[in-house]
Length: 266
Image (cartoon, rainbow, N blue to C red; front, side, top):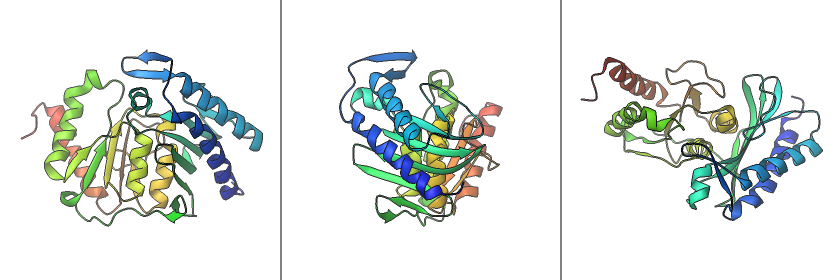
């Protein structure tokens, strides 16, 4: 893209505008599936993002969580409210996430946290920032000294034994495991050096496109669970500060092998 910083400014404008809608509580909640909700705020937030992006950058299509859209080529990838279940319950961890992808490759992203009025943003080759301050991942050099964060997909009820095996394995070998309920915010905390490892299954492109760029531009690393190539929407994602990535891969693969063998965690 010819001017990533200009496009990042466009994304920031859209994210801040939509974030104004996320400061209250929803009056109408619909269940898309068990424990998977959509509110009138999700819909209004995506409508506002589409309006701003369409006005300021009319030539680029939008792929959004609620209204869909083109899933290939160069496009905006939008989650108008990541952490809807938290938002429904008044739990203070949710955000607006806007990324720009060229095919499978994220080029830029911004994540706006309206609870703390915090804006995370990055563009390829230009670094990452939290508001006006540079973002940098942690300097933790071993999984034993790491703090991890994870999330559970909408099908967590069916996969609970498997997912909890990963949690137990990581819990045994780190300082602990956290769960925020927003994958985009989890990626932002890796970029900010507040946690060192994030993994999750069953995410969509709009959950991770923005956050992946921010992590990488802050010096971190993003891959599939096995350490291989990753793109937004792939079945699993692992993000770390980079220093401990290979060790985190080995830890998670050990959990996967034990699940497949039915051996449990010793």
